[in-house]
Figure 1 (cartoon, rainbow, N blue to C red):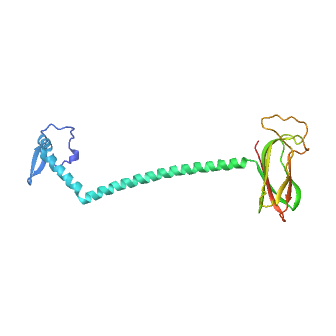
Figure 2 (cartoon, helix red, strand yellow; figure 1 turned 90 degrees about the vertical axis):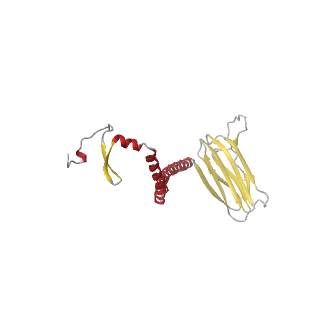
Figure 3 (tube, helix red, strand yellow; figure 1 turned 90 degrees about the horizontal axis):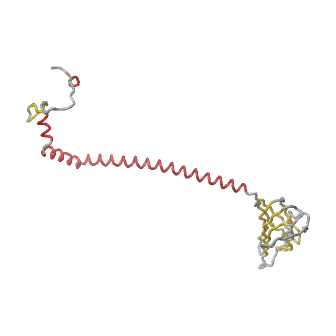
Length: 233
């Protein structure tokens, strides 16, 4: 079978022990059977020689360096993968945060809040603001100038404009600086006593959805008084 390529030789799937292999032994080309070769591979001498070779290779500086580089590359790849995962998670958190902010802004926009102000001239005058009927409100008036403060707060349920307002109101004036701004009157259409039913058929005016305030300004100049209300329901 001269001049036949190894790839063209018949293939076998197992050895019987009688097959021969060419080997170079002490500089001479010789032959060995598969059984003898298998027996040698199982000897302690072969195992020790290869173990020593592996130990030497493992302690070779170039091998150590290459191994360290391989581990470093693996760690770098893992870190990049983790960073990509964290970036995805951060993007998800940011998106959720933006959605929450948008919902919060939308909720705030849905609150029906109205504000305004009066320019209060010197002397005593009446100022008022009007709200739509058939709603419940949180209302307020406030002013803060040098030596003078006044505040009014109320909760009111308005049904019709010709019946009393159910709710409560509170007013306060600072007196420690000579009271350059003061209430002389507050709205009179409120009725209601806690845990009590109030029955009546008349209102103090035909416009109980308008809130009137008497304000006395002795500061010597025009001042600004703010007012506002929020529709609760």
